[in-house]
Image (tube, rainbow, N blue to C red):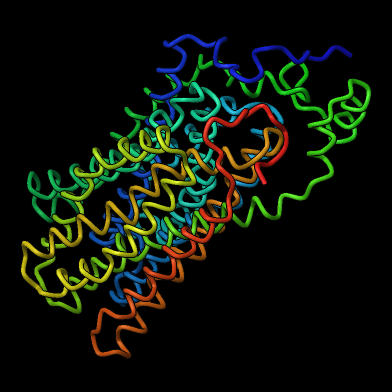
Length: 463
C-alpha cells in the first residue's frame, strides 16, 4: 500500500495551489454561505408574510402562523444531523466533494419550495411536502458554513487565513441582504393578492440562478492541499483508525500516534464556548432585540428592520477588518480584545436603544451588533478549524457550531423574552444574557492557545 511521504511542503501546503485556485475556493465558500443564509431568510420572511395562508388550514389563523413558524424551526433541528453526516464524510473523502453535495441539496430544496402546491390545491400534502423540503434544507446547511470555513482555512496561506476565511462571514450578510431586498421589491412591485396568488414563488425559483453558479464554481474545485497532505489519506480517502495507527507505527509518525491517544474534550469545549459567544449574542441581537424594539418599546417595525440592514452593511467593513487583525495580532488576542470591548459597550448601547430615539436606536444597534456578533463571526470561521487536528477537523468544527447554535440561539431569546415580561419591559435581562454569552467567549479565549499560523496538517488538536 503506497502512502504520501512527509515533505517540506507540510508546513505550507498551499504552495501547490495557484492564486486562481485560492480565488475559486474563496468564491465557492462565499457563494455557499450566501445561498445558505438567503435560503433561510427567504423562508423566514415567507413564513411571516404568506405561508400561514398558503400551506396551512385557514380555519384558525393563529394556529396556522404557529405551524408556519414551527416548520421554519424544523430546518434547524435537521442541521446537527446533517452536520454530523456530511462532516464525517468530508473528513473521510475530502471537503470539496461534500460541499458540492451540500450546496446541491440546499439549492434544490429552496427552488422546489417555489413550485409546491398549496393547501387549497392538495390539502394536508402541502405542509407535509414543505416540511420535507425544510428538513432537506437544514440537512445540507448543517455542514455548509463549517465546511466552507474549513476549506478556506486549509486553502489560504498561513499568514492570510483570517482575511480569506472572513469571506464566509461576509456570505451571511450577502445572503440575508439579498433575500430581504428581493422580498422588499416583491411587496412593492405586486399587490397583496398577486403576492399570495403566485408572486411569492419568484424568489424561491430565482434562487436556482445562484445555486447553478455555485455548483459550476465547485464542480472543478481542487481538493484542499491540507487534506491531500494528510499522512492518513491514501488515494483521496482517509484510512480507518486501525490502518492509520498501523501506518503511523511503521513510519514512526509520532504526531499521528499522539493524536490517536488524545481525547478532543478540551478543544471541543473551547470551540463550544467560542461559538456560544457568537451564536448566543447573534440570537439575542439579531432575533430578540428586534422584537424588543417593536413589541416592548413600541417603535415602528421599520426601525428595527432598517437598523438590521444598516448594521449588515457596516459589517462589510467589520468582518474583513476583524479577519485582518486576527492575522496581524493572533486569534487569541483578538478574541480577548473583542470580548472585552463588547462587554464595555453592552450597557451603553442598550441605554441608547431603550431611549426610543430613532438615531440612538440605530447607533446603539449597529455598534452592538458589529462588536458583539460580527467581529466574533469573522474570527470564528477560522479559529474553530485551527483548533482541531486534521483528521477530524470538519466533524468537530461542524458539531461544535451546530450544537452551540441550537442551545444558545434557541434558548437565549426565549429566556430573555420571559424574563423581560416578568421584569415589566426592563432591558436588564437582555444585558445579563449578552454579558453571559460574551463571557463564554472571553473565558475560552483566555483558556485557548494561540492557533494563528498553525500547521493544519498536524493531526493533533491545538490543546
